[in-house]
Length: 115
Image (cartoon, rainbow, N blue to C red):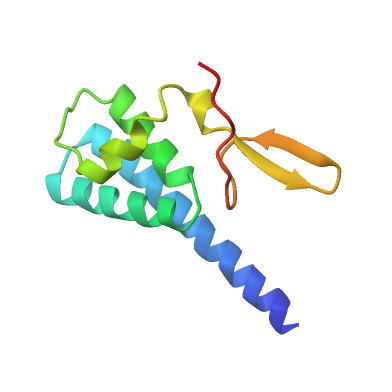
């Protein structure tokens, strides 16, 4: 039962982070605040370092669709060079039956890019 509670609380925390990333992305588009943008960058890097792509995808979408052109953290800028379109956020999940591809969910391995 402890495992179930632990896993459930992890899912709740993940859901909360995903809500935060949506807030950053859409909220900053409506009203840009430099202090919130810096938080967005920091949380995006933390999320990426923890094997998640959701925050990075939302950050990329903000940059793509926003009219704002803020200075971007150099490390985040370097990470984003690999992502030119939404499909670039596809990841490879290992399953019992082999490899499948899905959009950013869970820990990731970056799918091979063919250019």
